[in-house]
Every structure is written in structure tokens, then in C-alpha cells.
Length: 235
Image 1 (tube, helix red, strand yellow):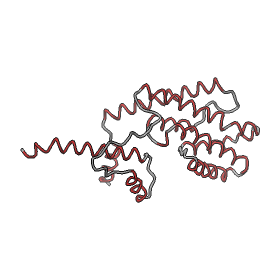
Image 2 (spheres, helix red, strand yellow; image 1 turned 90 degrees about the vertical axis):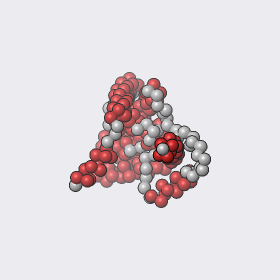
Image 3 (cartoon, one colour; image 1 turned 180 degrees about the horizontal axis):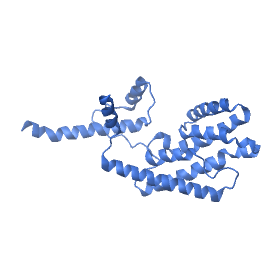
């Protein structure tokens, strides 16, 4: 038990200075992002629905806390939330049983997001929100409008705030993997990374190009460290 707790603490531990900076940036970005999204949505849209939907809170966590994640990129946020909300509306219009509609909306939203390369976890919540809010109970036009107002509008404003915030704070967003550093042996080719991921048979929240870049950087640092320490070891 003690060993398990020790391993858990080790996994959760982050250098204090880095943790404080990341937490401060993420929290500040979320504060600005959600506040401005709510304010601007209330000014731009007047409807029977809330000015902002709950899944945007989860979108903000991804956008400001892990902006390099493939799940936090603009198309994932805007496309994933909007398409999933549309799926939720379609299910609510065709399935009267709330229990079945709830499960079916999330399942179909996942399928649609994967097919459109817009996978975004809060999209599942957007689909479920469409079923629970049941906009078709108000009118058909309100139901058809829901994916756009407020979901798409909320998502677009949040992304625009995120782009501006990360530019001011010195982060590149939208994220794109840097060109892999030149390696003398070129051992870590992209096909090797993809083959390794396929062999593991699991999904990881990192772009293969980012993983390649990270491994090449680690290899370079290891080589530099070895070069620095070799003379001392000989002495």
C-alpha cells in the first residue's frame, strides 16, 4: 500500500516553480476565456438558451492548461463541440426515451468526432447537454439553432481568446509540431514512432510528431550530458 502511494505521489509531483507558473497561466487563461466568452456571447446572441454552456468549462481547461494537446486545437474545440451538439439535437428529436437518448448521443458524438478528426472530450458533454436541455421542446427552430447559438459561438470566442492569450504569454497556439531536430543516425523516424504506438495498442494524447521531437530532444540532451561528464569520469 505504501509503495502504491509512493508511486502515485511520484506521478503527481511536478517541480514547484514550473507547477506554479503552469497553474497560474492556466487559471488566468480560463478566467479570462470564460468571462469574455460569457460577456461577448450575451452581447452577440439573444436566445432562450443560456449565454454559455457547461462543456465550455472543460474546453477551457484543455485550451489553457494543455494547449499543445491535439484535443485542444481550434478545430477540435469548435468542430467537436458544434458537431456533437448537432448530434445531441438530432438524437433528442428522434429518440423519446431520455435514458436511451443520453447514451446514444454521446456514443454517436464520439463516432462523428473521430470521423471528422475533431475529437474533443467536452464534445460528449455538448451532445449530452443538447439532450438534457431538449431544445426541441421549445420549437424546431430553437433546436436547429442550438448547435450554433450558443455552442459554436461560445467555442469560437473561446478559441479566439485562447489564441490572443497564448500569444501574449509567449506560447505558440494553435500548436504545430516543430521540425524534428536533425539526428546523426536518424534512428527515430516517424514510421518507427507510429509502429511503436500501434504495437502498444493504446491511444495517447500527443501528436506523433511531437513525440518524435521530444525523443530527439531527449537523445540530444543525453548526448550532451555524456559529452560533458566523460572528461570528469576519466579524471
